[in-house]
Image 1 (cartoon, rainbow, N blue to C red):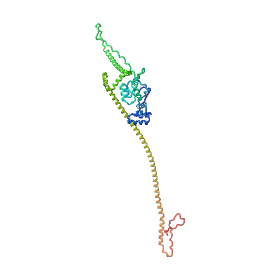
Image 2: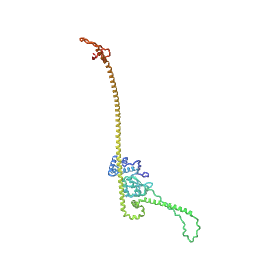
Image 3: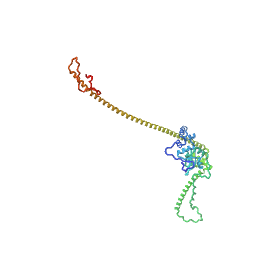
Length: 432
């Protein structure tokens, strides 16, 4: 991510916390396309092999700039609008046009620490970032721009260097001049006319100190030489705007790109230059293999993205089904609770009916027992009267036939009578 202060045409996006977000979800979240269009693009990507973003752009549902902003928001990078951003020609000319066209990326400026800001159409292409860092020898910081604007900028490469406009690339400090060597007296060839020198005092301590100072000066000189060499290299990169140096630098970097394993043979650069003609076919073959590898990697990335989109759509469907089943389960639970309440009410009513039935049965048994007791009480006196009347009839003497029989005497004992009869009670027929 860029660390410089915000510039015109730059929109920063912060990295998201938690699990990574799918590009389709980010497009919907930013409001760039409708959910139905995005889901249809996800389904189309499963069969066509294209990415969801490219399908939406091809259908006109999403612009190139909106796709770049969605990618920047997904990966937490800066979005650069190349129509407004002031591109640094010194940075843009560091990458050959062929490589910029192959990687769909172009350098657009420098950071304050010397890092190179690269605008890319696909920030997930880590192989392109690694190659650009190797070719330029600088630390690369990726940003996202619209693919059509990148293609237009690549078509203008190399950019003309503007006179009087300083680049933001840090200027190397000039190396200080080397220190003067320590003078030593020449005593090997004394002149014959010179008188013999006086005795030399013991200067071993001063000589040892001088040698230490000389060693320190040599070490400082070596350090300054290395700094000077580094400054010269950086100065050559800064002067890449000149046509001749740019062509030579591009050729050298192209050769180093295909001959990384042969870097130890840098001393034989002249011999390789003589053999550049027969090795042209090898370089072209290597470039074709690199292009094929990039195409294979891009296809694998698209397949992986489509598979992730498919899993995301399936997960959304399953979550929707789970929510529907949950609602149905809750409705069934409520219906079960209602039925349980009705069963409890019916059980209460049944218990009340059983209690009423037991009470009625008990009362019926009591009524039957009372009826039997009453019947026994009423029938016993009547039977006693009938027995006594029969015994008296047997004890009376016979009477003449012409005389009517005298009525038997009426017993004074208890007799059966009706309660509603107001007249004197009469004997039942079976007592006569």
